[in-house]
Every structure is written in C-alpha cells, then in structure tokens.
Length: 418
Length: 105
Image 1 (cartoon, rainbow over the protein chains, first blue to last red):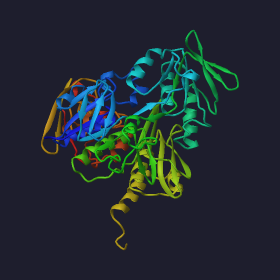
Image 2: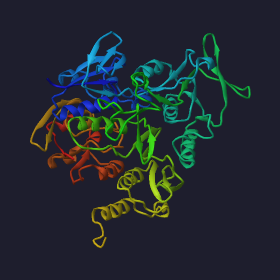
Image 3: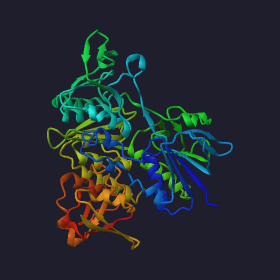
C-alpha cells in the first residue's frame, strides 16, 4: 500500500512541497489540511497590490483551487488539527476525524502578534495583517482622508504605510525601538527607508513609547503616549512581528523554542515528522535561525519533497527577501544577523543605494534599494562564498557583474598550483 | 486571449489559452508547467520563471528593461539571446501561437 503523507498547514511551504512531490511522480498519497478556508495563496501581495485593490483575489492562489483534487490529493481546508498522536502516528482534527500518517509535514506558519487586550488590542478598528481574511476585513476601512496609525516599523508596517499613502490615508507610524527596521537592517538602510516614507508623507516616530490605545464609542480612536500626548486615529494596524505556530508540535512533545527545530533535511526530532517554512528553526552559519520568508518556505518545501523521494540533499539555500514600497524596490540577499560592519555603495541615481554587510572580512548580506544589480550580483557573490573587500564594493566605479564573474570563475577554475 | 505553448526538455509540451493581461509566469504556474516557479510573484526578485522564446516570436514579447536584464544574469540555467523572465510577458492577442522553451536546471 502506498505511503500516506499528511501535510498540516496549507501555505506557501505546503504548496511548494506538493508541487515538487507531484512532479517527482511519487506514489505516496497526500492529505493536505489547512486551517484557513482557502487553498494556498501568496502572502506578499496582501500588504501591497492586493490591499490596493490592484490584484484580483484569484491571482493570489499559488495553484488553481481545483488543482489539488486533480492531482489526487485529499484536501481539508477550513479544518484545524487538534492533536498529533505520535505513538499511533495519527492526527485528530477539530471535527474528531482521525487520520493516519506514515510521514507528517508541519507547515503551520506563523501568527501576527497582537497587542494585548489590556492595551486596546481587541478594540474594533484594530487590525493585524497576515492572512487573506485579515486584508479582506481591513481593506474597506482604508479610505482616503482617514487617519491610520501603524504600530511597528518592520516590513509589514512599512509596506502597509506605503499602500495606505497611495490610497490617500494620513499615516503615522510608531516604532518603539530607536529606529525602524532595527531588528533586520543596519542604520544606513533604516535611514534610506525612513526618508522614503517621510518624502511620501508618512509621519514616522521612533523611540515612541505608547501607553495604550484609546477608544471612543466602542471603537479605537487613537493612542495615548507615555508623555500623555494623544495621537488620533480612525484605524490602527499592529505590525509588531509574528510568532511561529508551534502549539501542535509542542503538544506532541517536540521541543520548541522560537520555532520547531529541524535538522538539515527539515526533519524534527521525530524521524517521521518534518517541518517547513515560517514555523521552523534551523542552523545556518552556526546559528539557529527562524525565517519568515517565501524563499525559505519554497526551498524547505521543495527539499522535503526531494528528501522523501530518496534524494540525498541538505538544506543550505541562501536566504533572500524583497519588499516593494512606493516605487522603491528593496531586495535583500543573505542574512545580516551577526554583522560587524557595513559599507554603503551609492547607486546610479539619488534614489538607489545598497548596504553591504560584513562579519569581519566575510560578506554576508546585501540590502539593495532600487539597485537590482547590487542585489543580483551580491547574491551571486554571497552564494559562491566569495568575499570582495568593502572598499571594492563601495566604489561606484566597480562593475559588480564583472566582479561577480571574476570571483566566481576563480571558484570554478581553482589555481592549478593549489 | 492567446494560445501559448510551453515545450519542456523531455519533449513534452503544455498548451493553454491565456486571458489578456495575465503574465506568462502566472499562466505557466496555473497550468502546472514544470520548472516555472515564480517565487516572487512577478516582482523581478527571483528569476525562477526563465524561458527561452522561439526566435520568430522574440520581438513580439516586448522590450527587456534594465531590471529584467540584470535578473536574467542570475537564472539557474545560463541566459541566451532569446531569454526572458516570463512574468514580464503579458498575454495579448498578438501572442497567439507563442512557443516558449522551459529550461531545466
């Protein structure tokens, strides 16, 4: 009898796993269970062109909704899994259904952090942005002339700020830390993005201590700051990060700490349970990391499909990200965590620039703003584990394409004397 | 609407009628064309929707802008003179009968 692979969570990682699995022609039977009532969809456009009303809902779906059944996959959307019983290798759904698995793949994703109810997080008019349903609920509220208050200067908050400005809302963004993007980027990148938003009319307040949200007539009406100031708002978007959905794994006795730990083949400590995407934590360059990104979801989903079909592989994909805000294309290659210095490379125009991150003399990441060449060739160089000097990359006269080709040909044609 | 054909290296092919305005990466993923991933959704950040365009058709697929040109330098399979990122080609009646070759990494 064919093996059964049960996939819990129907997002990007699950879709990627299934696409690769079906392409590999494996005999195993798949059963996909997702808590959201819709098939896997792309999340990145939610805060951008979907919120703007520029992208139809159907175009968000990674595969056409009917595709899963056409592939012979059993699907249960709108179904929550209650528990995993590892000793009998079965899962129990909220409907009481019991489904046996030979292999289990957890693609449970992450959940947007909410502001506690004691601070007004549950008030009508307060939103988080993570799912299609979140955006379908908030989009009608995004009307020209209204005052939007965004809590958190990470990617979600900044992308939503850009969309809201395009729609004609007045936007104030509060960041508790010293600067926006503090957790993920160097000050040079934060400075560039801050200016971008300010020039588009967003009021950005950093080191902003908010006491609580205020209400009027049962709906959010603004924020009370620690110094007593009140910032009025018609709606509030909370963009203060996301946490990995590990409850199911924890309850099943898998040790979790900021993610479900997996090894280099995306296997958890239970050899029959794999995990992929936002919910996982894994070792990269000697550090345990958890990534919320399409790249990681796609690559881990792909890897599990290959591993389960018997391919001998290890996960070592280079992380990359992107964020579009206004007309600025921010593209990131590598992970800047642990950097010790940065160097800025001016772009071809006054609205383009790139930040190059070094850990000692090793190039580890690039943030490119309106500079695809810095992104593309930076990514090639980092992927090849090559380390041009900071002076070389900072020099606008350095041709990055030529530099990448030169460094990579060294890799392919090692010095015969060595 | 345009009928588009994707030819794979193993000789198999997939044809589909694609509505005007859709890009050919979306058309490929929704028709289950292998090796067209479209990870970034068409915003020129991944280069995973690389195709070779039949020479007779190349000019009709439109201009390659600077960003696409740069991203074509990082495709898994090395670019050729007739390379395009299919997310940058929009379906229109002029593309009726277009043939795209899908490289396999």
